[in-house]
Amino acid sequence: MYISDDIKYVGVNDHDLDLFEGHYHVPHGMAYNSYIILDEKIAIMDSVETNFKDEWLRNIKEELKGKTPDYLVVHHMEPDHSSNILSLMETYPTTKVVASAQAFNMMKNFFGEDFAENRIIVKNGDKLNLGKHNLTFFTAAMVHWPEVISSYEETDGVLFSADAFGKFGANDFEEAWDEEARRYFIGIVGKYGQQVQMLLKQLENLKIKTICPLHGPVISENLNHCVDLYNKWSGYKVEEDGILIAYTSVYGHTKEAVEILANKLKAYGCPKVIVRDLARSDISYAVSDAFRFGKVVLATTTFNGDIFPYMKEFIHCLMERNYQNRRIGIIENGSWAPAAKKVIQSMFESCTNIRFTENSVTIKSALNENSLNEIDALSKELCLCYSK
Image 1 (cartoon, helix red, strand yellow):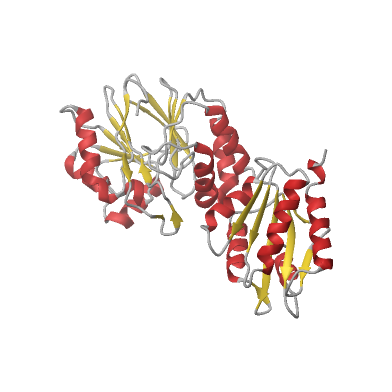
Image 2 (spheres, rainbow, N blue to C red):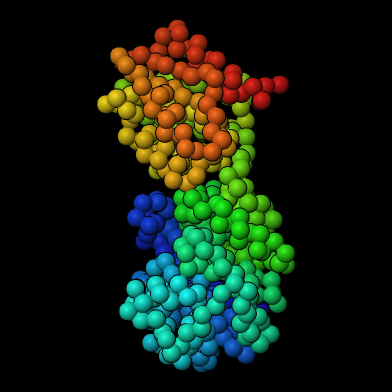
C-alpha cells in the first residue's frame, strides 16, 4: 500500500474476526493500520491488535533495515490499536512514546506501565520534527475516546486521523468505501458528531493529500467526497434521497403491510426504498440506513403494552447516536389495543427536529380496506417531494 516514498504501511489484515467490538458483523474482516515514517528520526504510528504482534513486528523490521525507531506515536488507546505497545518497547527499548496525557493514564491502566522515562506528552498544536518530515498534533477528544489525537505530516500532506475516516473490512478486500465507512462511523463514532465537527474545523485549512486512518484503506482518491460525507454524517444531515422501512412482524400481517408500502413508494417515485427486517438482519445496517436517508418508516406490533423488542432496541440505537433532522412514519399493529404509535412517538420526544408524518397506519390483526387506504395515504405523503 503506497503512501509516499518515506511513509510506509506496516499494518495487518484480520480475516478471522466475525464480530468487531463484540457485536458488529464484519463479513470481510478488519484492518488494523499502522504506519512508519522513515527520516533522520523514525516514527512508528500506532500498533495493532494483540494477536498480530509477530506479523506487525516483522513488517516494521523489514522497513527499518537494521535501524531503530525513535518514536512510537499513539493516537488512540483502544486495544485494537494499542495492544502491542509493550511488545514494541521490549523490542526497541530506547523508543520514545508520543501521546496525550490521558493516553499515558490509560497505558497505566492497561499495562501497569506509563513509560515515565520514555514518554513525550503532546497537546493541541505541538510539533515533532523528524528531519524532512514534521508532525503537528491536534486533539480529537471523544472521536471517539477522550485521549485521541490526530497528526498532520506537512511535507507529504498526510493526515493520521486515528479512528476518524475508518471503515469496516480488511484492506485486501476490494469494495466501495461509502457503505462500510458509513456503518462504521454511525456505529462507532456517530454519537460524537459535534466533536467530529470540531476536528474537521481544525483541519479545514490544511493541505491534506492523503488520509491514513486506523481502520480501512488509505484515502488519496476521492478525498473531497470522503470529507464531504464525514461532514454530512457528523452534522446529522441527510446524505441522499430515499426511505428506510424498518419492521418487525409476528404472524406476517405487518410484513405484508410493509411490502405493500414499499411497492407503492416505488410506484410513486421514491428513488430508493430499503426494507430491513430487524429480527433477521444485523441492526447496524438498519441504523446506518436511518442516518443515510431523511425518512424512515417504523412498522411494528404492540407487545406487552409496549413495542416489539427488536424495534425497541433499534430506536434506542438511533437515540444513542443523536438521531435528528428526520421524518418518521409509523405502521402499528395490535389485535385489541394498538399502542405502538404512542410508544414510538414518546421515545423520540428528546430528539432534535424529529417530525412525524400526518398519516399513519393502524392494523388490527390483519389488513382491511381502511388500513390499505391508510398505507396509500402514507405512501403519497412520503413521496410528495418525489412526484413528477
